[in-house]
Image (cartoon, rainbow, N blue to C red; front, side, top):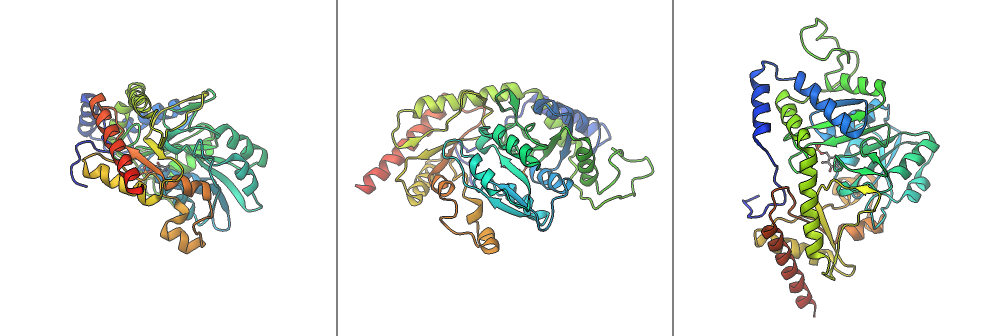
Length: 386
Ligand SMILES: *Cc1c(COP(=O)(O)O)cnc(C)c1O
């Protein structure tokens, strides 16, 4: 995409990232070294979990957790249609079937009563997502999973640093997964992390990320480098990326605080716009904002929303349709016969949401400009209508 005056997202990189990356490059060890171990410790601690397993993306992390739990062909995994496509794709990678359930219009996460109702004899896991970082219902999914004796997997790729009722995201289920793509709360360019208290699962994931080598074999040169005890992959993270992650983790509290400042400024500025539904955050949540997504009021159409997004972009302001429903992606329609109307709440929300520019260096002046542009685009739609 061409240069935008106010982009949708922009990473925050300081001298500390540069210095640690240099140190990693000069260390002579470019994979599976001290930086990776330190990064794993920091992220696991943030999620309140015993083990962290660094991988090359959030998507890889989800794949390994599903395989590590033995989920495969013939199995079903309950998940949300309102997420980034990787949540459901990871279920397809292991040959299992994603069973979607509709969302709660307030949290935009799966409606817990529908999760309960969707559990059948083939259900092997619940894969939950904190949409846009919102942790609501995670405790409910955890207790449903516990009572049905199936694992809860948390796709926490949008929720690093969020907590709910005093519990940290990533730590609600058997395993959680974070992603570190450039628009996330912290970034390593590309990267991900599995967190869990389950040592066997952590070991299985460590082995699978490293071509199926024994989990105990962290690095090179011990003589068993060419022993492969299971089918594995190369999902390792580089030391260079891990170094960036260590610096970003040290800054996490500041990054979260800055994101909160921007979110609050948007809320303040847009609260009184009657055409908009703003994100709701429940009281028991401590929010680590991933993106700032507003919803046009009921009655707005997808075409109107799309015109508003295009109008914003024409005015050099980033905007995007986070997220189109997964079940309506061409691939899912074809494979599972999904169609419009299957998950009406998710669909109705998905056609009216739009993401606004959101990153830590966003200034008050830029926030004002974004909001002004949005308001102009909305009133233009009102004029077209009448
Ligand atoms: C970002 C994200 C992922 C993983 O993304 P990667 O690009 O593979 O790191 C997975 N699920 C959700 C919900 C995400 O937002």
